[in-house]
Image (tube, rainbow, N blue to C red; front, side, top):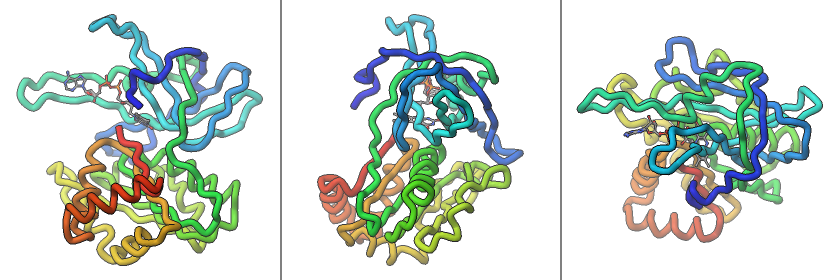
Length: 284
Ligand SMILES: Cc1cc2nc3c(=O)[nH]c(=O)nc-3n(C[C@H](O)[C@H](O)[C@H](O)COP(=O)(O)OP(=O)(O)OC[C@H]3O[C@@H](n4cnc5c(N)ncnc54)[C@H](O)[C@@H]3O)c2cc1C
């Protein structure tokens, strides 16, 4: 579904309860965890769904509002009203040639909001990642950057709400540097909550030379686990969920193309998995 197809009505007012930069000190990216409280009304969020955020635009190109989507990372319940947590990366882009800086409208707006501020939201919108009804199902979760948000919610749901999960859950998380790892750093290490679960394992993929903007070394991260991952893919009870910024798609095609020993073999396998609903991407 294209962004333009998401309805911007009905609209709801949400109030910022808390906002915190959850990257390590010294990181040159800013990613904020923002907890929103809604006016009292029925608003059922589910893990993996997204909410829309509307920001008044300048009216350029006939657009009076900017509508952008953010994945529900958690649904804390600390007050009587519905609450929702989103994780937002401040997006700015500096043109290499002109040096001109382009400021991402909604991400900057959200990162600048402070407790008590009100914002306008839409949704919630569809959940791309369904939780299998069979507790023996395996899940391979692959996230890049803020793509960790739906998996934080999903893993919590599996182990805390459902419980006694029997299938393997493997979380592969990529970032350009350790400083960019969200929920796996000194400030927040949420996934340690599940490290005592026999079926859960999380591993990181980082860029070998973060300052050089080198690609993330996905192959290095799974070197010792390539056999296990390939076996999981061959198992009809495995679901692969992918989330994050667009480069993740190419990176994974390259990685799995190498594992399949041919891009064409991988393209066919991936198409089959997608058709069977066993490979689902949330790429933005
Ligand atoms: C289903 C879904 C879920 C998502 N979940 C999340 C999430 O959990 N967290 C998250 O942070 N994001 C998420 N996103 C992405 C998010 O919706 C926005 O796309 C992102 O925040 C950027 O929006 P923006 O309004 O800040 O930037 P925009 O104003 O849309 O600009 C986009 C980018 O392009 C750059 N840019 C702007 N103008 C130019 C130009 N003229 N030339 C070159 N570059 C330019 C900006 O600097 C910015 O980096 C999700 C997207 C989808 C579709």
